[in-house]
Image (cartoon, rainbow, N blue to C red; front, top):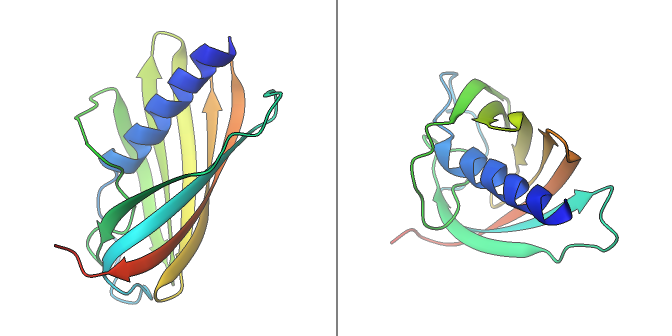
Amino acid sequence: MVKKSFVLLGCAFTALLFTACSSSSDSSNVNLQEGRWQITTEVKMANLPFAMPPTSYTTCLTQDDLVPEQGIQQDNNACEITSQNVKGNTVSWTITCQSDQGATVSNGSITYAGDTFNGKITTEIPGAGTTEQVLSGKRIGDCP
């Protein structure tokens, strides 16, 4: 059951990160220094008997692309962004992914502070419970 939860969590998290689109709100006020960012993610799941190690990856972030994208990306037609909002320096979103087990719903939020950010994604996985991903990011240079 735990292994299946990891697979569902991984699918939901990856879909969340690479299917996010730019906000329809005016994002010109977001305190984001555009460029290449290192993102570190810690996954917390209440029913796991051990702590999962943090993972890191790099991606480019811009005013038009405020939600971090992860690694090699593929289209996932089972996921849909149901809301995205920018308020001040915070971008938030909700994404729903359909599977045979039911709908996985993720709510995320990141607050930018120039060359750093902190955020959180909470995901409700059918049959596996709720997970929380704590995100931190720092700008490490220019995009290629």
